[in-house]
Length: 168
Image 1 (cartoon, one colour):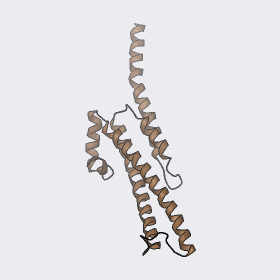
Image 2 (tube, one colour; image 1 turned 30 degrees about the vertical axis):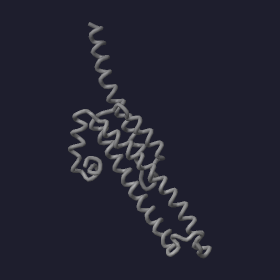
Image 3 (cartoon, helix red, strand yellow; image 1 turned 90 degrees about the horizontal axis):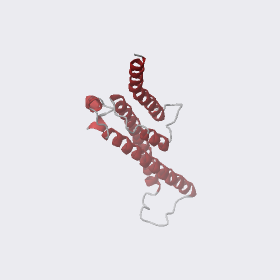
Image 4 (cartoon, rainbow, N blue to C red; image 1 turned 135 degrees about the horizontal axis):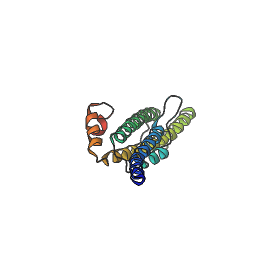
């Protein structure tokens, strides 16, 4: 009788362990992607590691967390792309009329500003490229979901504006 009770107890604990592991993994994942006014975004490498920690998890909660992260990263990439475009436009104004001329001639103040903008544009491009790689990793994770309830959650959220970029 005691063996039967112990067996039942072990089976019950074994079934709740994956749910607890999933809960902890999703909580850590969400923390990696959470940022706000006082808290800047975590480095891309740290967020990629958080995506890798979700390997093997497949549930509606996983789908929701990954979709939310995708929306946050997409917004971050769009904002940075807009900044980069403004930087490129300012650079274009500084060299207007000298686009094909090397070496360009301009006053020292404008030349110094151009050099600062050139470095800034390169940094912004590298950051956007890293964010696009992170988006691809998140999309791969969503594409790896196979359970019916996970897929139903994704389909159900297709009308949600946050998930529209992923599903459509």
